[in-house]
Length: 200
Image (cartoon, rainbow, N blue to C red; front, side, top):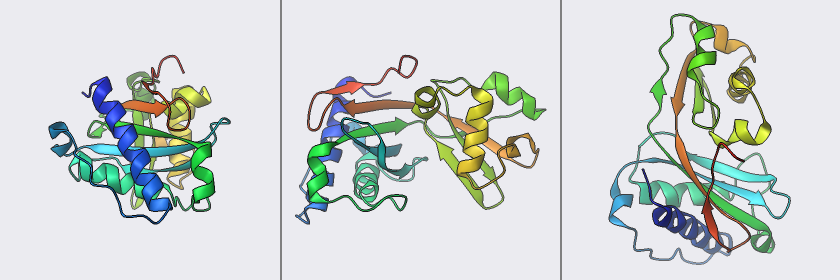
């Protein structure tokens, strides 16, 4: 979907945007590649360094905006993820930036909820669980990092939606999957690499 060069560009751009926003400086003018004009889902994740604990993660699961616009929005919003205190200038030397470039979510069609256990693949799929107005999303790298099996992945996505952990067994619950290509800094402002989600 995206080359290593495009993934590195996305991470570098997100880092520049984050630093300018946190320092209350004008956002830089970035010459995005032509491929970033296509609408795409994207999430920007900020982790502490070197502990790699989550510090912020915000994004757009669907292709609502051109990638360049969605990337800017997600990078800014990740600095003040409501689950954490806002990122400050003193934090910038102690974080690593990660960008997930996503395919559009697709409804997983099943006759019985138990079929989800065979249709979802850890390391390939991210999940969205939706029931009524409740909606929760977990990126494809999360179950790999947490060493979950498919049932645990479904359960935690339900909890992310504010629903009971076994709500995926309810036929009124919809489960969507998507895939992602994930690029991250190895250290603050350092080398950018493509995450192999099967070998985290």
